[in-house]
Amino acid sequence: MINVLLLVKRYTGNYPLLNEMARLDSNRFRCIVCYLGGEPDGHNSLDGLAKTYYLGLKNPEIKPWNAKTRRLLVEILDCESIDVVNCHLQRTISVGVNAARAARRRPVVFATLHGLGSAGSLQRKIGNWFLYRHLFKVIGVSEAVRADLLENNWGLSANKVITVHNGIDPSPFLVESSRAAAREALLSAGGEGCWFGTLGRLSEVKNQATLLRAFARVVKVEPHARLILAGQGDLEGELKDLSATLGLGKHVLFLGFRRDVAQILLALDVFVLPSLREGLPLSVIEAMSSALPVLASRVGGIPELFGDTEMGILIDPRDEVGMADAMLTLARLSGVERARLGSNARVRALACFTADGMTRKYASLYAAAYGGM
Image 1: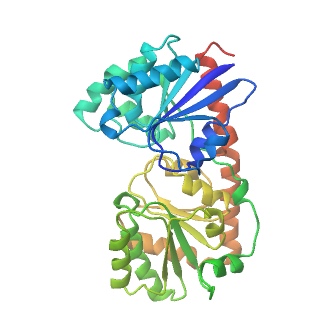
Image 2: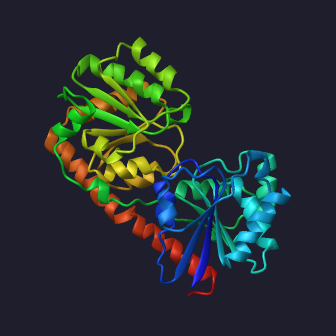
Image 3: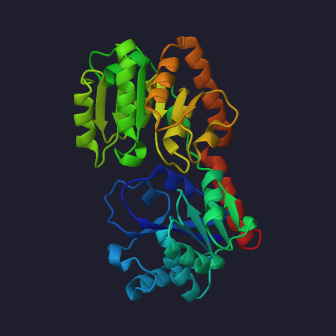
């Protein structure tokens, strides 16, 4: 039995991707999850899947040289006889490496990087140069993340950095249901026309402002079109003001934070992700699994989700006119043609981006690090 610890900076709510990463073969692995910061809220699905620790540390304490942090983490490593540590996101790597070197069993340490720009400053490059030599492997969630790691870090060999694509449990998105009913659940009057939608926090990097401006062009020629935005964030007020200024009141629906993602996707004709930067977005995989055509930015790992599959359109996220033209192209397709693109997207998602496939790859890596069990 290999004891694996997933080290996470902070608990901020139930996170399905982490839940799936912890769902290892129980005949071979015992998985423990440690959140350095944050408090339990009773809604974390991981509490029923794996043993979880919530250390409740404050941000200033989440440092490798903090005596309290090191002591608490070493105690967990020793008490749970941890063999493998996987540090998620950049901030946890130094903490995990430092504790692992002080633990009795000296566990093997991995790092999984979910985004781009992990070596964006000289200080970070120097820190990574020291840290990464203590890692068994550095894992990027897309080839784009892997390439970013190799390009921006000193002395990092290509065979040390590998890709494990994110994956989801597709089952919630495979349920067939009435689109009209799903629309009425969001908007009591329902609605005809092409419905576009996007998921994610309302922030600058997600680029919803450009999406709204592009959509304003769309409704001038497709007056029955609608745009659904699910998510919350710092820019919520600003984006609502922009929508009002553009005269989009009846065409745009802000849903706020929602847990019923699968039901929202059922109401859509086209999924849109206009982000400026992405590692490998789960929202696109969810839309693909829901058999939706996808219009998304040609950035980061998003083109890897498309591959050579005809399933939508990739765009320059800063090109407002190009984004509007792409939306109009998809809006003017027949329902049969959009269904064909969506079916292609689902087939690719089920073949390449499932949680089962992802966890098998992690299991192989952990086993290899611990002697091939």
